[in-house]
Length: 564
Image 1 (cartoon, rainbow, N blue to C red):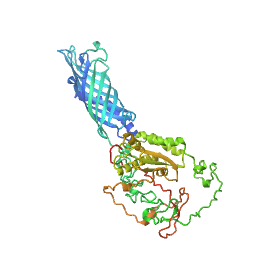
Image 2: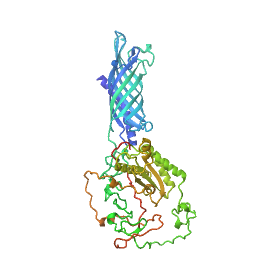
Image 3: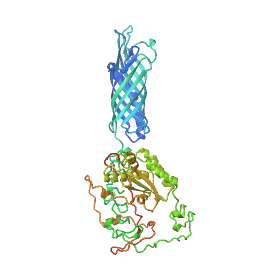
Image 4: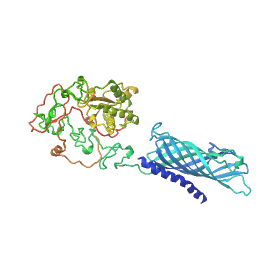
């Protein structure tokens, strides 16, 4: 009972300190960062009567507990408690036994700090330094009464260990540390005849750690906040492993808003296909092959009038030149930013900027066989977000490519998902979604041979190009139309989900955006298509240049294949 009382008294102070730090730290970090450890130690004595260091046959064994509290990426608060007996032989006739109760509080310096190793690495080395209190009851050199002497010491400890992460909440660790009581009387030999620091002991420990509590999940979608890339998703929306709404056809319109969830479409047509990109989905398009830049009505057919009768302001003169670049506003694609007439009055992209775009391709990386960006890519993407701020009249094209290993359908999906992941990161930096377009080309356009690892590494890439907003997508100009994902990948069975209500044409018409007049793409001449059937006049709407909108959210990680 006496020892139990001493254990509780010893543990009280470290527990109180950890509890205080827990309240402070948990309020500052979203993850669960408090863990409980159960361990078993081998203790080895060294002092006046010899040394048992690294002699496990002479070790004394002790159970213990530990509490660990996260402070920063590289630093934890750690408290330990153990109880044991040290034994040795003063002489053939005088053995000694020392009952030890030790409690300490210290700091753990972690190498999985985001610099040396990832914070969530499987193997997590660390250094440990602590100070605490030791109670010792010695049966040593007998005094005149033959009564054991009880002592309390300040104890300092230093060590190193490795934690092995077994899962999100469980770990296994090994640790070795040296304890040095500040008084040299562990073995009962009088201090007057003992040099300071002569009595010490090694502690070799193995144990398990268990994380406490649950990781916060603010939007209650089943994905912890620390891993949730879309933290404000409604709880009734199905999400992928990253917490973003499912988008099975990868068209940028999530399933719960997609009227055609199995066919890639556009946001303007509520996720339904629009082959001629005129803003009218194919099922309602009476004139499905309207050329780009031709104004169409609600049925997708060319209109016969483009006069805006609502304008009341006095039109500018032909010589008005807002930016003073010598290109009149009427002919200036960028009337508020000066540029040469050879670039339609828009600022030209400098050679330095083009070089930065090429370098960005080399610095973007992903996890193996996944569309998950590596943290090393973030700085490069941050630079691209700033670059778009310097070129407000331009949009950014992102093109994903893979090597040739694995099925073509898988590569096509993976290339598109990786381009979408880069796009989503840029959108998180407050870049307008209309200024970032993405394409995926699979292994169709290699830069080098796919027969060597060096060549395959070059071919696995995400390319970035700037192009004037309203022009054809730069990747599409370079590589052609993006392959159709739906035709490349067979339909997969889906888990049961609430049936979607059918939406008739009248309902779809009400959901459609109000007609908006858009600037046509640059063309030398436009040939109007002949309507298939007469249609009533409707408000004027102009089709954008033929470039598909890009996904606006990250997409589910694909199945694994060798070395993507």
